[in-house]
Length: 113
Length: 112
Image (cartoon, rainbow over all chains, first blue to last red; front, side, top):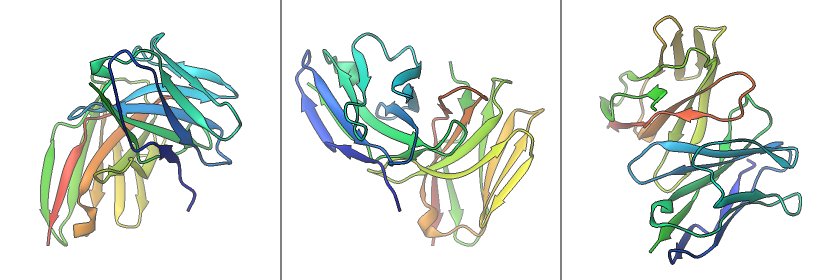
């Protein structure tokens, strides 16, 4: 069964450093997403991406965040200058369309120290 | 601003019995609802969905019921199996929007 792949599974970074979280969505999917889950809290929407541009973003997705689909296969989330409160599980997801069930990756646990 | 609420953080059910997971929402513009299941160290897995034009959708052991007037939906699992033990998230979206709002999840434990 097709799956969304995320790397790395765990990333530890120093506060203020830049991190790039990588995702390979399902190949025939057109919509891509990043969500995050801070430990013990709900899954929160960050950003959606369609047709090579951001289609929606949440208040969390400020200027420190950016997304890119550099080569038609990878979908990356960059955090320019990490803060302690960025520590969370980051999930990438993709879907065939807006009202289709999303397929999530297994997540990247980001720990900012 | 919690637009999707799952008020029961946990639920324990005996194997073979029915599990009922509840979800409430506040945004009347939501018209598409989904349930996801999440095992530890894995991403959420899509389970079942329902659009607001229906009040029930069934897929095997899983049935989702939608009560639009009460802004309430529920997921029924029958019969419950130990492998169903996971965290279940309710999610909602509105037509044309490209994001989902998740509830905080309910941890279901099915006791053998």
